[in-house]
Image 1 (cartoon, helix red, strand yellow):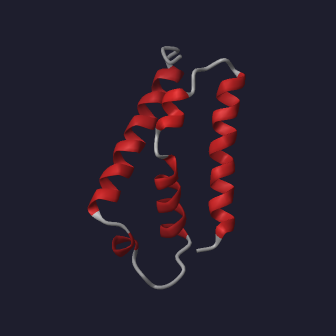
Image 2 (image 1 turned 135 degrees about the horizontal axis):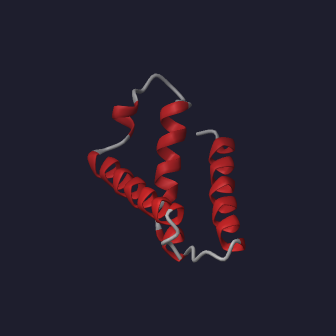
Length: 86
């Protein structure tokens, strides 16, 4: 797999966490999320290395974990938007 998109997404995640910290927000819950699994899915499904369909790249457990992570991330972002997230 091309390491370049992976490195870019890791940097984006680090930037997000860093900016939230700079604004005085507690990022421990965000840092605990397995965000790399979401990055892997985004990269491999959008920039495939071969003709393998995305449905064959990930198993059900990985899909369930990604959905749970995304839901938790959305919950955190909604709380920040409403001013209830610390």
